[in-house]
Image 1 (spheres, rainbow, N blue to C red):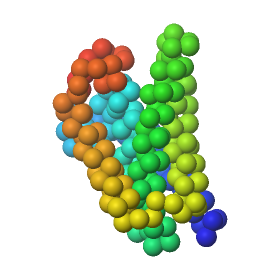
Image 2: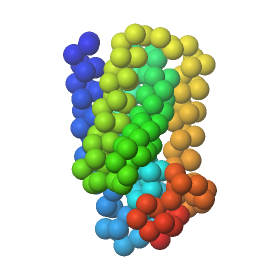
Image 3: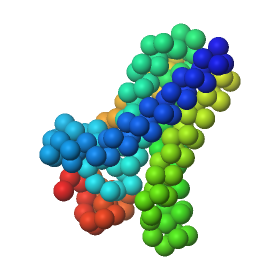
Image 4: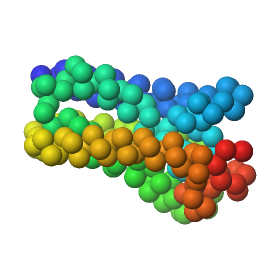
Length: 177
C-alpha cells in the first residue's frame, strides 16, 4: 500500500511539473482564449504561477480520489492542506530569493515551481500515511477548500486585486493583457 501511494504521489509530482509547465504557455498559444485563461497563466505574476501549480494538482486529485479515496479516508482534507502549503511555497520562495538576489532569474523561477510541487506531494504523502483528519467534517472542509481555491484562481484571473502578488512582474500590469 505504501509503495502504491508513493507511485501515485510521484506520478502527481511529474504530472504537475509537466502540465504546469505547459499551462504557462497555453493562454498565448490559444490566441488569448478566455477558457484557456481560466486555467493557464495569463501573465508573469506570482499569483498566476501559483495557479500553474494548483490546477494540475486539482485535475490529478480528481483521478486520484477515484482510485485511492477508499483506502485513504483522509484524502480530501490532506490534499487541501498540501495544496495550501504548496501554493504558499511559491510566493515565499520567490520573494525570498528575489529579495536576496535583487532580481529574478528564469532557472530559479523554475526551481521555485518544482520545489513547491515537490513539497506539496511530499507533505501529501506524509499526511496520507499518518491517517489523521479522517472525519467527515474534515473531508467536507477539504473539498470546500479545494473548490474555493479553484474559484479564486479563476476569479482573480479576470478580476485581480491591485496588489503585488497579482502584478505582472514583466509588464507591471494586472490580469489579462
